[in-house]
Image 1 (cartoon, helix red, strand yellow):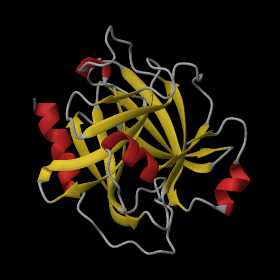
Image 2 (cartoon, helix red, strand yellow; image 1 turned 45 degrees about the vertical axis):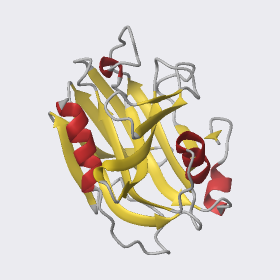
Image 3 (cartoon, one colour; image 1 turned 90 degrees about the vertical axis):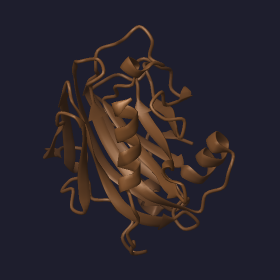
Image 4 (cartoon, one colour; image 1 turned 180 degrees about the vertical axis):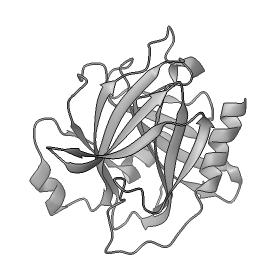
Length: 229
């Protein structure tokens, strides 16, 4: 119950902030403009250097669940694609039923969504996760809130230790999972956690941004490990 309330509170905290059209990148390497929220303990988030992406964010969880969120409004008619790269070095311990609360630990996850006139209970979001307990493409409602829809964009068939680049059309995903149109989002968040299983997890994040459907930067980065929708 406490986790359900605090997750809803996190979404409630993501009130909007004006975004500049010429600043599509959400700087996760320095976490400038990001705020932290703690469910249990504190996951360590530290800047690091990577030979592929340069400056990246390293996240390490020891029986902890905390994340960072960014207050920003983005109009999806201009930038409907959420793009990022991530790598997992260590997954949280497996559980018997990945659909229950103890199975909701993920080495890497990205939230995107918006608030509504109903306040925190009206907040809706999609959570993109890397789950070693599901096949890629698996989807389910979060056991903590029926307003949160989880999508495994990387699954058990993807090995740890390798960077994966993801592009998701938020407008299309939102229509498919919630059955409604969306023209803007006012929350983006990330979290690495292992509190429900009492274990450890480690992941790396890079190049998080909302981008146009046709983006020269994205096109230049395409390779066989890219997962798209």
